[in-house]
Length: 306
Image (cartoon, rainbow, N blue to C red; front, side, top):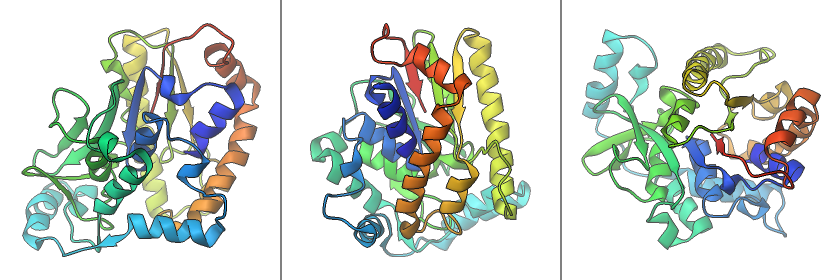
């Protein structure tokens, strides 16, 4: 959220003008705000708020407890496939303390019930992982079930071990980031080549994390590998497309520690991201490209945000 807001403040470009928007996990929540003209400070902070108010509001919406999931589903969708192919799949479908219905409600609070139950008119893709097929589902495309964007965001945000799988119809979904934190190749669904693809990649840090924990190293390594493959696909089909990747700086990474899902870390991480992005966008090689593609008084160009 803060990264896109920083780009908008610096360039005057409205993220909703993007030809294509792709959202995964927490990025799917941002995508729902962007496509409904709700990406602003009011999405996080109210005029009379202090840090504790913001923390409590996020906690009350995101972390909703409910009845536990059937362990048999975890055995079928996580343990058995995990034994066959050891890795993150072991945790898919695992019992968890929270359900993601509160996230769907939070989306509704920001964009209204009509928008929450429908889909944006402009190309928007929200990615979740289907436990049964063990493949990504891209809501907002012809290949996926028709759902409202609030439910799609909840499905995309159901992080294993924290949230139980999110049911839609006869399917169960978990966080779309289990296979890739970016899914940048989905922009290739655009009928016309894009001039610029902006990739926000929180799990593909370019700078090694200081005192990185094992899981952080693993997530960065997997995320960077997936993103590199996706960028290669984009450049193969659209050789003239400019792909810009923005990853968190060490200061932002530290602000979200030790637990990025801790609601009390939201405000420090948000403010640190704004400060960090100001420095990042001021780098000559970054700013020249943004100035070329996005500055408000230039000729409109085709852009995608992910």
